[in-house]
Length: 561
Image 1: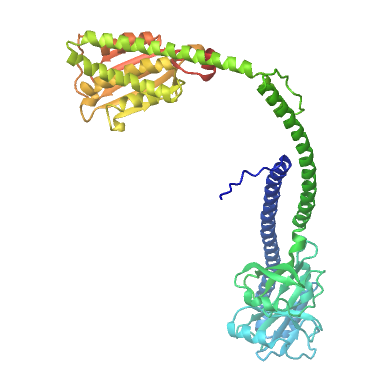
Image 2: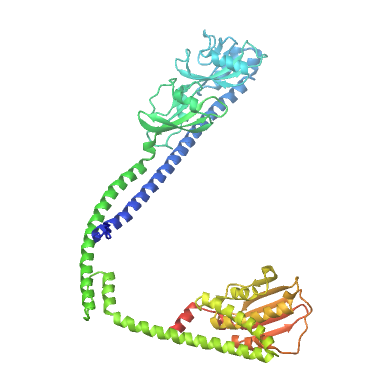
Protein backbone atom coordinates (compact mmCIF):
# COMPACT_ATOMS: atom_id res chain seq x y z
CA UNK A 1 0.00 0.00 0.00
CA UNK A 2 1.47 3.29 -1.13
CA UNK A 3 1.04 6.23 1.16
CA UNK A 4 1.53 9.75 -0.22
CA UNK A 5 2.40 12.40 2.27
CA UNK A 6 0.64 15.70 1.84
CA UNK A 7 2.42 19.05 1.84
CA UNK A 8 3.84 20.06 5.17
CA UNK A 9 1.76 22.83 6.70
CA UNK A 10 3.54 25.17 9.03
CA UNK A 11 2.16 28.08 10.96
CA UNK A 12 2.77 31.64 9.87
CA UNK A 13 4.80 32.14 13.04
CA UNK A 14 7.36 29.60 11.85
CA UNK A 15 7.51 31.20 8.41
CA UNK A 16 8.06 34.63 9.93
CA UNK A 17 10.74 33.25 12.23
CA UNK A 18 12.45 31.65 9.24
CA UNK A 19 12.23 34.92 7.34
CA UNK A 20 13.71 36.85 10.27
CA UNK A 21 16.52 34.29 10.53
CA UNK A 22 17.09 34.46 6.77
CA UNK A 23 17.57 38.21 7.09
CA UNK A 24 19.36 38.39 10.43
CA UNK A 25 21.85 35.51 10.05
CA UNK A 26 23.31 36.62 6.69
CA UNK A 27 23.47 40.17 8.00
CA UNK A 28 25.42 39.13 11.07
CA UNK A 29 27.65 36.89 8.96
CA UNK A 30 28.25 39.74 6.55
CA UNK A 31 29.16 42.11 9.39
CA UNK A 32 31.43 39.41 10.84
CA UNK A 33 33.09 39.01 7.44
CA UNK A 34 33.60 42.76 7.20
CA UNK A 35 35.10 42.82 10.68
CA UNK A 36 37.36 39.90 9.77
CA UNK A 37 38.54 41.69 6.65
CA UNK A 38 38.98 44.88 8.65
CA UNK A 39 40.98 42.95 11.23
CA UNK A 40 43.23 41.59 8.50
CA UNK A 41 43.70 45.07 7.07
CA UNK A 42 44.39 46.48 10.52
CA UNK A 43 46.95 43.74 11.07
CA UNK A 44 48.64 44.57 7.76
CA UNK A 45 48.56 48.28 8.62
CA UNK A 46 50.04 47.49 12.05
CA UNK A 47 52.87 45.58 10.38
CA UNK A 48 53.52 48.48 7.99
CA UNK A 49 53.61 50.95 10.88
CA UNK A 50 55.99 48.74 12.84
CA UNK A 51 58.34 48.36 9.86
CA UNK A 52 58.23 52.11 9.27
CA UNK A 53 59.15 52.74 12.93
CA UNK A 54 62.02 50.23 12.71
CA UNK A 55 63.29 51.87 9.52
CA UNK A 56 63.07 55.33 11.10
CA UNK A 57 65.16 54.22 14.09
CA UNK A 58 67.69 52.39 11.91
CA UNK A 59 68.04 55.55 9.81
CA UNK A 60 68.72 57.67 12.90
CA UNK A 61 71.35 55.22 14.21
CA UNK A 62 72.91 54.87 10.74
CA UNK A 63 73.29 58.64 10.61
CA UNK A 64 75.03 58.59 14.00
CA UNK A 65 77.43 55.81 12.96
CA UNK A 66 78.14 57.58 9.68
CA UNK A 67 78.96 60.79 11.55
CA UNK A 68 81.33 58.84 13.78
CA UNK A 69 83.01 57.26 10.73
CA UNK A 70 83.34 60.65 9.06
CA UNK A 71 84.92 62.14 12.17
CA UNK A 72 87.36 59.21 12.40
CA UNK A 73 88.32 59.70 8.76
CA UNK A 74 89.10 63.37 9.41
CA UNK A 75 91.11 62.57 12.54
CA UNK A 76 93.14 59.91 10.68
CA UNK A 77 94.63 62.65 8.53
CA UNK A 78 95.70 64.76 11.52
CA UNK A 79 99.32 66.05 11.14
CA UNK A 80 100.06 65.19 14.77
CA UNK A 81 99.04 61.57 14.19
CA UNK A 82 100.98 61.34 10.96
CA UNK A 83 104.11 62.69 12.72
CA UNK A 84 103.67 60.35 15.67
CA UNK A 85 103.11 63.16 18.21
CA UNK A 86 100.49 61.24 20.17
CA UNK A 87 100.43 63.69 23.09
CA UNK A 88 99.58 66.61 20.81
CA UNK A 89 97.02 64.46 18.97
CA UNK A 90 95.50 63.41 22.32
CA UNK A 91 95.21 66.95 23.60
CA UNK A 92 93.84 68.35 20.34
CA UNK A 93 91.27 65.56 19.91
CA UNK A 94 90.19 65.68 23.53
CA UNK A 95 89.56 69.41 23.23
CA UNK A 96 87.71 69.02 19.93
CA UNK A 97 85.37 66.33 21.27
CA UNK A 98 84.76 67.95 24.64
CA UNK A 99 81.05 67.96 25.41
CA UNK A 100 80.31 65.16 22.93
CA UNK A 101 79.61 61.53 23.89
CA UNK A 102 82.55 60.38 21.78
CA UNK A 103 86.05 59.35 22.88
CA UNK A 104 89.08 58.47 20.75
CA UNK A 105 91.40 55.49 21.29
CA UNK A 106 94.57 54.80 19.32
CA UNK A 107 95.80 51.20 19.32
CA UNK A 108 98.63 49.25 17.76
CA UNK A 109 98.17 45.97 15.88
CA UNK A 110 98.23 43.95 19.09
CA UNK A 111 95.34 45.96 20.49
CA UNK A 112 97.44 47.81 23.05
CA UNK A 113 95.97 51.24 23.73
CA UNK A 114 98.38 54.05 22.90
CA UNK A 115 96.02 56.81 24.07
CA UNK A 116 92.44 57.18 25.31
CA UNK A 117 90.77 60.57 25.53
CA UNK A 118 88.66 59.35 28.44
CA UNK A 119 91.77 59.70 30.63
CA UNK A 120 94.77 62.07 30.64
CA UNK A 121 97.61 61.27 28.29
CA UNK A 122 100.23 59.05 29.89
CA UNK A 123 97.76 57.15 32.04
CA UNK A 124 98.76 53.47 32.00
CA UNK A 125 96.43 51.66 29.58
CA UNK A 126 95.89 48.01 28.80
CA UNK A 127 94.76 46.34 25.60
CA UNK A 128 91.36 47.18 24.12
CA UNK A 129 88.47 45.13 25.49
CA UNK A 130 87.25 44.08 22.00
CA UNK A 131 90.19 42.54 20.13
CA UNK A 132 87.97 40.55 17.70
CA UNK A 133 86.45 43.65 16.13
CA UNK A 134 89.90 45.26 15.85
CA UNK A 135 91.32 42.22 14.05
CA UNK A 136 88.28 42.11 11.70
CA UNK A 137 88.65 45.79 10.79
CA UNK A 138 92.42 45.49 10.22
CA UNK A 139 91.90 42.45 7.97
CA UNK A 140 89.11 44.05 5.92
CA UNK A 141 90.70 47.49 5.79
CA UNK A 142 87.23 49.05 6.22
CA UNK A 143 85.49 50.98 8.94
CA UNK A 144 83.49 48.59 11.13
CA UNK A 145 81.28 48.85 14.17
CA UNK A 146 81.81 46.48 17.08
CA UNK A 147 79.24 44.65 19.19
CA UNK A 148 78.45 46.09 22.58
CA UNK A 149 80.93 45.11 25.31
CA UNK A 150 81.81 46.16 28.82
CA UNK A 151 84.69 48.66 28.68
CA UNK A 152 87.34 48.32 31.39
CA UNK A 153 88.38 51.95 31.14
CA UNK A 154 84.84 53.43 31.09
CA UNK A 155 83.29 50.87 33.41
CA UNK A 156 80.19 50.92 31.17
CA UNK A 157 78.69 49.09 28.22
CA UNK A 158 80.13 50.70 25.10
CA UNK A 159 80.59 50.10 21.39
CA UNK A 160 83.42 51.04 19.02
CA UNK A 161 83.64 52.36 15.48
CA UNK A 162 87.07 51.26 14.20
CA UNK A 163 89.05 53.05 11.44
CA UNK A 164 92.16 51.19 10.18
CA UNK A 165 95.14 53.54 9.63
CA UNK A 166 97.67 53.61 6.83
CA UNK A 167 101.11 52.25 7.65
CA UNK A 168 102.52 55.74 7.17
CA UNK A 169 100.91 56.88 10.44
CA UNK A 170 103.42 57.61 13.15
CA UNK A 171 103.64 56.56 16.78
CA UNK A 172 102.89 52.90 15.98
CA UNK A 173 99.13 53.46 15.73
CA UNK A 174 97.41 50.83 13.57
CA UNK A 175 93.81 51.97 14.07
CA UNK A 176 91.71 54.77 15.51
CA UNK A 177 88.70 53.80 17.58
CA UNK A 178 85.80 56.07 18.41
CA UNK A 179 83.97 54.71 21.42
CA UNK A 180 80.61 55.72 22.85
CA UNK A 181 78.52 54.61 25.77
CA UNK A 182 75.72 52.37 24.46
CA UNK A 183 73.17 54.02 26.72
CA UNK A 184 73.70 57.33 24.86
CA UNK A 185 72.03 55.84 21.75
CA UNK A 186 68.72 55.63 23.62
CA UNK A 187 68.18 59.30 22.83
CA UNK A 188 68.06 58.37 19.12
CA UNK A 189 65.31 55.75 19.60
CA UNK A 190 62.09 57.40 18.42
CA UNK A 191 58.85 56.29 20.11
CA UNK A 192 55.20 57.24 19.86
CA UNK A 193 54.35 55.79 16.45
CA UNK A 194 53.14 52.54 18.02
CA UNK A 195 50.94 51.68 21.03
CA UNK A 196 52.33 52.56 24.47
CA UNK A 197 53.11 48.94 25.40
CA UNK A 198 55.38 48.41 22.39
CA UNK A 199 59.17 48.48 22.57
CA UNK A 200 61.97 49.83 20.41
CA UNK A 201 65.58 48.68 20.42
CA UNK A 202 68.85 48.51 18.49
CA UNK A 203 70.65 45.14 18.40
CA UNK A 204 74.25 44.46 17.40
CA UNK A 205 75.58 41.74 15.09
CA UNK A 206 75.73 39.25 17.99
CA UNK A 207 72.06 39.77 18.85
CA UNK A 208 72.92 41.80 21.98
CA UNK A 209 70.88 44.80 23.07
CA UNK A 210 72.63 48.10 22.31
CA UNK A 211 69.93 50.62 23.25
CA UNK A 212 66.16 50.66 23.85
CA UNK A 213 63.34 52.99 24.81
CA UNK A 214 62.81 53.86 28.47
CA UNK A 215 59.89 51.47 29.05
CA UNK A 216 61.94 48.38 28.09
CA UNK A 217 63.59 46.83 31.16
CA UNK A 218 66.14 44.77 29.24
CA UNK A 219 69.84 45.13 30.13
CA UNK A 220 72.34 46.49 27.61
CA UNK A 221 74.46 43.62 26.32
CA UNK A 222 71.78 41.02 27.00
CA UNK A 223 70.77 38.68 24.19
CA UNK A 224 67.63 39.84 22.39
CA UNK A 225 65.74 37.92 19.70
CA UNK A 226 68.57 35.42 19.47
CA UNK A 227 66.17 32.74 18.25
CA UNK A 228 64.83 35.04 15.51
CA UNK A 229 68.10 35.87 13.80
CA UNK A 230 67.93 32.78 11.58
CA UNK A 231 64.46 33.81 10.35
CA UNK A 232 65.61 37.20 9.12
CA UNK A 233 66.33 37.09 5.40
CA UNK A 234 65.62 40.63 4.20
CA UNK A 235 66.77 44.14 5.03
CA UNK A 236 63.41 44.83 6.66
CA UNK A 237 60.26 42.91 7.45
CA UNK A 238 57.97 41.44 10.10
CA UNK A 239 58.17 38.21 12.13
CA UNK A 240 55.39 36.70 14.25
CA UNK A 241 56.52 36.20 17.85
CA UNK A 242 55.12 34.80 21.07
CA UNK A 243 54.98 37.18 24.03
CA UNK A 244 54.35 34.99 27.06
CA UNK A 245 51.54 33.14 25.31
CA UNK A 246 50.18 36.25 23.59
CA UNK A 247 50.46 36.81 19.83
CA UNK A 248 52.87 39.54 18.87
CA UNK A 249 54.88 40.81 15.93
CA UNK A 250 58.45 42.07 15.67
CA UNK A 251 59.44 44.43 12.87
CA UNK A 252 63.11 44.74 11.97
CA UNK A 253 65.28 46.90 9.73
CA UNK A 254 68.97 46.49 8.98
CA UNK A 255 71.10 49.57 9.58
CA UNK A 256 72.38 50.26 6.09
CA UNK A 257 76.16 49.88 5.78
CA UNK A 258 76.55 48.39 9.23
CA UNK A 259 75.95 45.05 10.91
CA UNK A 260 73.32 46.18 13.43
CA UNK A 261 69.53 46.02 13.26
CA UNK A 262 66.65 48.03 14.64
CA UNK A 263 63.67 46.20 16.19
CA UNK A 264 60.12 47.30 17.07
CA UNK A 265 57.86 44.74 18.73
CA UNK A 266 54.75 44.37 20.81
CA UNK A 267 51.41 42.54 21.20
CA UNK A 268 48.96 42.46 18.32
CA UNK A 269 46.14 43.00 20.77
CA UNK A 270 47.06 46.56 21.65
CA UNK A 271 47.43 47.46 17.99
CA UNK A 272 43.94 46.16 17.21
CA UNK A 273 42.04 47.23 20.31
CA UNK A 274 39.30 48.91 18.27
CA UNK A 275 38.67 45.72 16.29
CA UNK A 276 38.39 43.59 19.43
CA UNK A 277 35.95 46.11 20.84
CA UNK A 278 33.93 45.86 17.61
CA UNK A 279 33.80 42.06 17.94
CA UNK A 280 32.38 42.46 21.43
CA UNK A 281 29.77 44.91 20.21
CA UNK A 282 28.82 42.54 17.40
CA UNK A 283 28.27 39.71 19.89
CA UNK A 284 26.12 41.81 22.22
CA UNK A 285 24.29 43.45 19.33
CA UNK A 286 23.60 40.06 17.72
CA UNK A 287 21.96 38.77 20.91
CA UNK A 288 19.90 41.94 21.28
CA UNK A 289 18.76 41.80 17.64
CA UNK A 290 17.81 38.14 18.01
CA UNK A 291 15.62 38.90 21.03
CA UNK A 292 13.97 41.87 19.33
CA UNK A 293 13.40 39.80 16.18
CA UNK A 294 11.69 37.04 18.18
CA UNK A 295 9.35 39.57 19.82
CA UNK A 296 8.60 41.19 16.48
CA UNK A 297 7.85 37.80 14.91
CA UNK A 298 5.33 36.95 17.63
CA UNK A 299 3.56 40.30 17.30
CA UNK A 300 3.42 40.18 13.49
CA UNK A 301 2.22 36.58 13.52
CA UNK A 302 -0.70 37.47 15.80
CA UNK A 303 -1.76 40.39 13.59
CA UNK A 304 -1.40 38.40 10.37
CA UNK A 305 -3.48 35.49 11.71
CA UNK A 306 -6.26 37.86 12.67
CA UNK A 307 -6.20 39.59 9.25
CA UNK A 308 -6.21 36.27 7.38
CA UNK A 309 -9.23 35.08 9.36
CA UNK A 310 -11.10 38.27 8.39
CA UNK A 311 -10.27 37.78 4.71
CA UNK A 312 -11.33 34.15 4.94
CA UNK A 313 -14.76 35.18 6.25
CA UNK A 314 -15.09 37.72 3.39
CA UNK A 315 -14.21 35.06 0.81
CA UNK A 316 -16.83 32.65 2.18
CA UNK A 317 -19.52 35.34 2.01
CA UNK A 318 -18.44 36.29 -1.52
CA UNK A 319 -18.66 32.61 -2.53
CA UNK A 320 -22.18 32.49 -1.13
CA UNK A 321 -23.18 35.42 -3.36
CA UNK A 322 -23.29 38.04 -0.64
CA UNK A 323 -22.15 41.62 -1.04
CA UNK A 324 -19.25 42.17 1.30
CA UNK A 325 -17.74 45.35 2.64
CA UNK A 326 -13.96 45.61 2.92
CA UNK A 327 -12.54 44.53 6.26
CA UNK A 328 -10.29 46.94 8.16
CA UNK A 329 -7.33 44.78 9.15
CA UNK A 330 -4.95 47.57 10.05
CA UNK A 331 -2.42 46.39 7.44
CA UNK A 332 -2.13 47.99 4.03
CA UNK A 333 -1.56 44.77 2.10
CA UNK A 334 -4.47 42.82 3.59
CA UNK A 335 -6.70 45.90 3.32
CA UNK A 336 -5.84 45.98 -0.40
CA UNK A 337 -6.94 42.34 -0.69
CA UNK A 338 -10.19 43.20 1.05
CA UNK A 339 -10.83 46.14 -1.29
CA UNK A 340 -9.95 43.91 -4.26
CA UNK A 341 -12.62 41.40 -3.24
CA UNK A 342 -15.18 44.17 -2.89
CA UNK A 343 -14.36 45.73 -6.27
CA UNK A 344 -14.12 42.48 -8.25
CA UNK A 345 -17.23 43.26 -10.27
CA UNK A 346 -15.93 46.72 -11.21
CA UNK A 347 -12.61 45.21 -12.28
CA UNK A 348 -14.42 42.71 -14.49
CA UNK A 349 -16.27 45.51 -16.24
CA UNK A 350 -13.06 47.47 -16.78
CA UNK A 351 -11.38 44.35 -18.14
CA UNK A 352 -14.15 43.89 -20.70
CA UNK A 353 -13.87 47.54 -21.72
CA UNK A 354 -10.12 47.16 -22.24
CA UNK A 355 -10.75 44.09 -24.39
CA UNK A 356 -13.11 46.08 -26.63
CA UNK A 357 -10.56 48.90 -26.87
CA UNK A 358 -7.83 46.47 -27.94
CA UNK A 359 -10.13 45.00 -30.57
CA UNK A 360 -10.96 48.48 -31.91
CA UNK A 361 -7.28 49.38 -32.01
CA UNK A 362 -6.48 46.13 -33.80
CA UNK A 363 -9.21 46.83 -36.37
CA UNK A 364 -7.87 50.38 -36.86
CA UNK A 365 -4.30 49.21 -37.40
CA UNK A 366 -5.45 46.39 -39.66
CA UNK A 367 -7.42 48.85 -41.79
CA UNK A 368 -4.36 51.11 -42.04
CA UNK A 369 -2.11 48.23 -43.09
CA UNK A 370 -4.69 46.97 -45.58
CA UNK A 371 -5.00 50.48 -47.01
CA UNK A 372 -1.24 50.65 -47.46
CA UNK A 373 -1.14 47.19 -49.00
CA UNK A 374 -4.08 48.02 -51.26
CA UNK A 375 -2.40 51.22 -52.44
CA UNK A 376 0.87 49.34 -52.94
CA UNK A 377 -0.77 46.61 -54.98
CA UNK A 378 -2.75 49.12 -57.04
CA UNK A 379 0.35 51.14 -57.92
CA UNK A 380 2.34 47.98 -58.65
CA UNK A 381 -0.40 46.69 -60.90
CA UNK A 382 -0.46 49.95 -62.87
CA UNK A 383 3.28 49.67 -63.50
CA UNK A 384 3.13 45.98 -64.48
CA UNK A 385 2.39 44.82 -68.02
CA UNK A 386 1.42 41.29 -67.05
CA UNK A 387 0.61 39.02 -64.14
CA UNK A 388 4.07 37.48 -64.41
CA UNK A 389 5.64 40.94 -64.01
CA UNK A 390 3.23 41.91 -61.22
CA UNK A 391 3.70 38.94 -58.91
CA UNK A 392 7.51 39.29 -58.18
CA UNK A 393 7.23 43.03 -57.66
CA UNK A 394 4.23 42.69 -55.38
CA UNK A 395 5.91 39.90 -53.43
CA UNK A 396 9.11 41.91 -52.88
CA UNK A 397 7.22 44.98 -51.72
CA UNK A 398 5.02 42.94 -49.41
CA UNK A 399 8.16 41.35 -47.91
CA UNK A 400 9.70 44.79 -47.38
CA UNK A 401 6.49 46.01 -45.74
CA UNK A 402 6.37 42.82 -43.64
CA UNK A 403 9.90 43.45 -42.37
CA UNK A 404 8.80 46.85 -41.06
CA UNK A 405 5.76 45.27 -39.41
CA UNK A 406 8.04 42.61 -37.83
CA UNK A 407 10.18 45.34 -36.29
CA UNK A 408 7.09 47.07 -34.90
CA UNK A 409 5.80 43.82 -33.48
CA UNK A 410 9.14 43.06 -31.81
CA UNK A 411 8.98 46.44 -30.10
CA UNK A 412 5.31 46.11 -29.14
CA UNK A 413 4.29 48.79 -31.66
CA UNK A 414 6.44 51.30 -29.78
CA UNK A 415 9.52 53.19 -30.95
CA UNK A 416 11.75 51.48 -33.54
CA UNK A 417 15.37 52.50 -34.03
CA UNK A 418 16.01 54.21 -37.37
CA UNK A 419 19.32 52.35 -37.55
CA UNK A 420 17.55 49.00 -37.03
CA UNK A 421 14.95 49.81 -39.70
CA UNK A 422 17.63 50.62 -42.30
CA UNK A 423 19.66 47.52 -41.42
CA UNK A 424 16.59 45.26 -41.57
CA UNK A 425 15.58 46.53 -45.03
CA UNK A 426 19.13 46.46 -46.45
CA UNK A 427 19.95 42.99 -45.04
CA UNK A 428 17.84 41.41 -47.80
CA UNK A 429 19.97 42.92 -50.55
CA UNK A 430 23.55 42.74 -49.26
CA UNK A 431 25.48 40.29 -47.04
CA UNK A 432 28.61 42.46 -46.67
CA UNK A 433 27.61 44.96 -43.96
CA UNK A 434 30.72 47.06 -44.64
CA UNK A 435 29.29 48.11 -48.02
CA UNK A 436 26.53 50.06 -46.26
CA UNK A 437 27.57 52.67 -43.68
CA UNK A 438 24.78 53.89 -41.37
CA UNK A 439 25.56 56.93 -39.24
CA UNK A 440 23.54 59.04 -36.84
CA UNK A 441 22.69 59.40 -33.19
CA UNK A 442 20.08 57.00 -31.71
CA UNK A 443 16.62 57.95 -32.96
CA UNK A 444 13.29 56.16 -32.40
CA UNK A 445 10.55 56.31 -35.07
CA UNK A 446 6.80 56.38 -34.67
CA UNK A 447 4.91 53.31 -35.97
CA UNK A 448 3.53 55.22 -39.02
CA UNK A 449 6.99 56.52 -39.84
CA UNK A 450 8.39 52.97 -39.59
CA UNK A 451 5.92 51.73 -42.21
CA UNK A 452 6.38 54.64 -44.62
CA UNK A 453 10.16 55.01 -44.33
CA UNK A 454 10.49 51.22 -44.47
CA UNK A 455 8.82 51.28 -47.90
CA UNK A 456 11.16 54.06 -49.03
CA UNK A 457 14.31 52.22 -47.88
CA UNK A 458 13.04 49.03 -49.51
CA UNK A 459 12.64 50.85 -52.84
CA UNK A 460 16.08 52.44 -52.47
CA UNK A 461 17.63 49.06 -51.73
CA UNK A 462 15.85 47.42 -54.65
CA UNK A 463 17.03 50.15 -57.03
CA UNK A 464 20.61 49.90 -55.65
CA UNK A 465 20.73 46.15 -56.28
CA UNK A 466 19.29 46.37 -59.79
CA UNK A 467 20.84 49.56 -61.14
CA UNK A 468 22.87 51.31 -58.42
CA UNK A 469 25.84 50.86 -56.11
CA UNK A 470 24.94 47.34 -54.94
CA UNK A 471 24.87 46.06 -58.51
CA UNK A 472 28.70 46.13 -58.69
CA UNK A 473 31.23 44.68 -56.17
CA UNK A 474 32.93 48.00 -55.40
CA UNK A 475 29.75 49.98 -54.82
CA UNK A 476 29.10 51.63 -51.47
CA UNK A 477 26.14 53.30 -49.76
CA UNK A 478 26.28 55.94 -47.04
CA UNK A 479 23.12 56.55 -45.01
CA UNK A 480 23.09 59.20 -42.33
CA UNK A 481 20.73 61.53 -40.51
CA UNK A 482 21.45 64.88 -38.91
CA UNK A 483 19.57 67.45 -36.83
CA UNK A 484 19.36 71.23 -37.08
CA UNK A 485 17.50 73.86 -35.12
CA UNK A 486 16.20 73.85 -31.56
CA UNK A 487 12.99 73.17 -29.65
CA UNK A 488 9.82 72.64 -31.64
CA UNK A 489 11.58 73.86 -34.81
CA UNK A 490 14.27 71.20 -34.71
CA UNK A 491 14.45 69.33 -38.01
CA UNK A 492 15.82 65.98 -39.09
CA UNK A 493 17.40 65.28 -42.46
CA UNK A 494 17.83 61.69 -43.72
CA UNK A 495 20.25 61.20 -46.61
CA UNK A 496 20.90 58.17 -48.84
CA UNK A 497 24.06 58.52 -50.97
CA UNK A 498 25.44 55.91 -53.36
CA UNK A 499 28.99 55.89 -54.71
CA UNK A 500 31.36 53.81 -56.83
CA UNK A 501 28.41 52.35 -58.70
CA UNK A 502 27.68 52.30 -62.45
CA UNK A 503 26.97 55.59 -64.26
CA UNK A 504 23.64 57.03 -63.22
CA UNK A 505 21.05 57.68 -65.91
CA UNK A 506 17.89 59.54 -65.05
CA UNK A 507 14.84 57.87 -66.55
CA UNK A 508 11.81 59.77 -67.72
CA UNK A 509 9.53 56.91 -66.73
CA UNK A 510 8.03 57.53 -63.27
CA UNK A 511 7.44 54.11 -61.72
CA UNK A 512 5.98 53.06 -58.38
CA UNK A 513 9.40 53.23 -56.71
CA UNK A 514 9.87 56.85 -57.76
CA UNK A 515 6.37 57.65 -56.58
CA UNK A 516 7.09 56.09 -53.17
CA UNK A 517 10.43 57.90 -52.84
CA UNK A 518 9.13 61.33 -53.84
CA UNK A 519 5.40 61.76 -53.48
CA UNK A 520 4.40 59.14 -50.92
CA UNK A 521 7.43 59.73 -48.65
CA UNK A 522 6.99 63.53 -48.67
CA UNK A 523 3.31 63.22 -47.78
CA UNK A 524 3.93 60.57 -45.14
CA UNK A 525 6.60 62.52 -43.23
CA UNK A 526 5.01 65.91 -43.76
CA UNK A 527 8.20 67.39 -45.17
CA UNK A 528 10.28 67.66 -48.29
CA UNK A 529 11.95 64.92 -50.34
CA UNK A 530 14.58 65.34 -53.05
CA UNK A 531 15.63 62.54 -55.42
CA UNK A 532 18.80 63.43 -57.34
CA UNK A 533 20.49 61.42 -60.08
CA UNK A 534 23.98 62.71 -59.37
CA UNK A 535 26.93 61.68 -61.52
CA UNK A 536 28.69 59.86 -58.64
CA UNK A 537 25.53 58.05 -57.59
CA UNK A 538 21.85 58.28 -56.63
CA UNK A 539 21.02 60.77 -53.86
CA UNK A 540 17.83 60.78 -51.79
CA UNK A 541 17.19 63.33 -49.03
CA UNK A 542 14.14 63.61 -46.81
CA UNK A 543 13.69 66.48 -44.36
CA UNK A 544 10.94 67.27 -41.85
CA UNK A 545 10.33 68.37 -38.29
CA UNK A 546 11.84 66.02 -35.74
CA UNK A 547 8.57 65.81 -33.83
CA UNK A 548 6.75 64.35 -36.84
CA UNK A 549 8.96 61.25 -36.89
CA UNK A 550 10.22 60.78 -33.32
CA UNK A 551 8.53 58.35 -30.97
CA UNK A 552 8.36 59.61 -27.39
CA UNK A 553 7.02 57.26 -24.70
CA UNK A 554 5.34 59.96 -22.64
CA UNK A 555 3.47 61.47 -25.59
CA UNK A 556 2.39 58.09 -26.98
CA UNK A 557 1.26 56.86 -23.57
CA UNK A 558 -0.88 59.95 -23.07
CA UNK A 559 -2.28 59.57 -26.57
CA UNK A 560 -3.19 55.94 -25.89
CA UNK A 561 -4.87 56.90 -22.66
